[in-house]
Image (cartoon, rainbow, N blue to C red; front, side, top):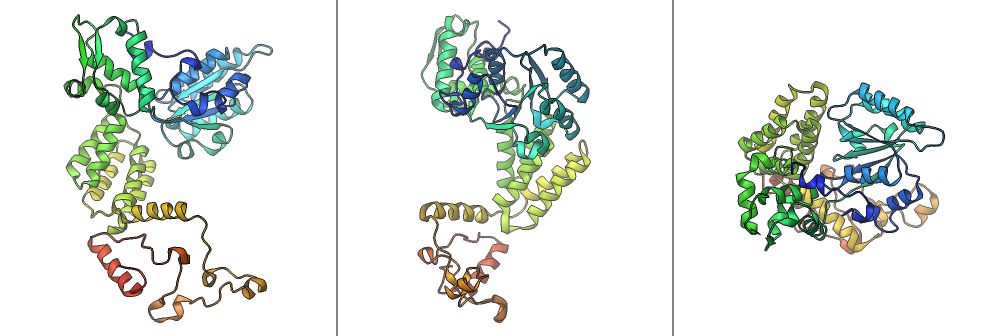
Length: 424
């Protein structure tokens, strides 16, 4: 049978749909909208293989709506206009408006997204978009304001187990084979919460033409995937594995590996903005104050690749990748905000010390707001010790400078300023 396992198992009803119970479980917001028969235009944001396309098709089927689909990868403004024209033709009397499903809507340009506005606003279509990217960054505000945004989550191990059991027990091909699953850790780990990837792996490791018993173990799954890497990656299923390898190569200061993984993404048609955004994040998370110029260069890279576009953008991405990979590393700023947030969650809303409170009125001044505040610039070196943290967490170190040249200087400065106050 030439139809892929993932397609054969695609559910046609909400009751058969696995995952996203926070949206489509009993009493959940999207399920209520579907059951009422009145759904707004909305965008589904989530990783690959979690059921975005399937959910859109289920909604159209359950509401008996015409279903028009476009892929942002190969559709232009002309295709959008034709789709809207077809939607208008499908509206007779009080018939419900068609659902226009746009996969990877984040890849649409501003002009393409603009061409959707009128149809969405006038109710010619109910827009259902799917994206793996944060719509706040990739969808124009005018369109985003007309849509709900629903966040879809990776499948849990329990949900992956349900999907695996469904494949083995109900699929017309798999159910006829003698398959014993002794271990699932590798299956679930390599699928990474992606249901489609899980089914692709299962189909890859099981020879459907065999007459012998198939025993699935962790070693067997790993070996088969390594032997069939090209087949496994033919549809970009390793998207998140490759970006992970790319980021970890930069973090590990290996410019050769980093440029290799960059090339893999570019040759695979990866969105250059997706890559550049990851570089901006990494420049603070993994380099930070060890080299503050890293963030400046990464941000300039993001702006430049948007201005230049491919194929020249690859040069800018390569330069930035190599610079970040060969830069000194520190995650001190990243750890500082993590620890600060944990402290806030633990201690709650502690009072701001009186000396550093704002005192715009006489009453506030009479209550001691701003009293004894030391204006730093009035002191030698523009510094004077005073308490800025609430008294309950006084002396808590949240920023611990990294062991690199730049932050060693910062540590020395902090030690000089805050001796006997913080334990630097």
